Structures are given as C-alpha cells and as structure tokens.
Image (tube, rainbow, N blue to C red):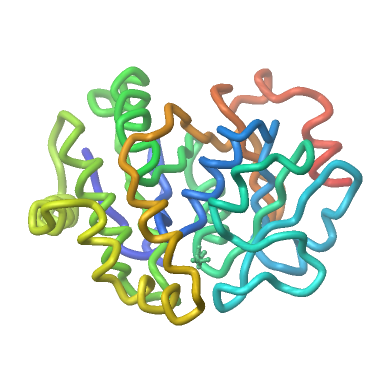
Length: 250
Ligand code: MLT
C-alpha cells in the first residue's frame, strides 16, 4: 500500500520510507551525491552536526534558511554543486530530522525530490516494494505543518507507482494534478515565500528541475542522531562497510 505522511510527526513503521523535503534538504543531499560527495551524514540537530566536524567533512545546513555559525555553507543545493570535501554533513530544521526519524522506523529509506523523481520511482518499482510491502512517502513539512511543495512531490511520486493507495496518497495526487508545472507548486508555497524573503529565490527554480539527476540517496546506516546516506547499497549489516560506523561515531 502506498501512503503519505503529511508531516514528519506522522512517521510510522513501513517497509520502505521515502523522505521528501524538496525545499531544500533532500534536493541538497541529492545534488551533493551527484557532485561527488562520497557520503552525506544527516544530523538531527545543528549541535550534532558541529560535533561531527572532522578533516574532509563539509558542514552544510540552515536555521531559518541561513547558514548556522560554525558551518561551511548553507542548505542550498546550488552550494552543493562544487564538492569541497569527501563527506557532507547536513543539518536542517525539518528535512534532516525527518530523515533521521524515518531511518529509525523503516529498514529501507530513500530520499526524493524533483531532481530525482523518475530515478526514485524506478528504484521503488525495481525493489518490488509496491507489490510486496508498504511504501510511506514522508513529507518533511515545515515546523509541524503541511508543506505544499512536499505534498506536491509526494503526489507526483505516488502517481508513478503501481498498487493500492490510501486516501492521503490520493489527496497528494490531487494536489499534484492541480499544478501544471513543478515550479507552479513550489513557487506557490509558504516556504518559497521564506526563501524569497531571504534572497534565496534562485533555489526555487533550481529545485523544480524535474528528473535532472539519476541519483537515489539511500540511508545505509543510522546511529543515534545521525543517518548515513550514500548511493546504491542496501541497508543491511553485511552491506555497511566497517569504517562507516566508526566514521559516523567519531
Ligand atoms: C528544512 O529542512 O527545514 C529545509 O530544508 C529548510 C530550507 O529551505 O533550508
């Protein structure tokens, strides 16, 4: 069954969780992996991210859309275009905690946005999840409230998947159908207003570029308040390189 969690407070156990924070956390992680970062360490808080500082790591994130003190760059996917280290540590207000929470509840967690919409849909279908288990599309939302842009992406993704769906998924698909272009949905959101007020409006169009990347970020390990994200490898103890756990906890 395909279901949609309207906010991260609605995270529940599911066979597969797909976390969506299109403005901007999951767009930034997707872009970072495409840019060549080997791994992304998603931290539940800014303080946790600061504690992960190490050689080769770049700290990216935001509070109120602005780069926190002690960080190297903001939460803009455009800032992730150039790789400045080996690993990106990401801490954001809604998206990063949603990823960590989903990783605690589901054995398989993917990250979706518009940049990788088709790639995530293909991965879900090839995993066999639509036929064999529950898929929960987790909208990060904004400060506990529904975010139009996340619901739009959840609806677009749901519409690409076979199988039965809940009313929440049908509602998300209706939101998706109501917008002719991705940019229409993103630009109409309250979060877009906040980005415009912060002078970050170019990120809105950047994040609206549908299926520009063939990248499917996947949680490969979760420890305490950190989710480790990489490409490809399934999350299973045998699939996690030995140094991963050491590195996360270092
Ligand atoms: C979040 O996680 O709250 C967002 O990604 C905020 C942002 O646009 O930076």
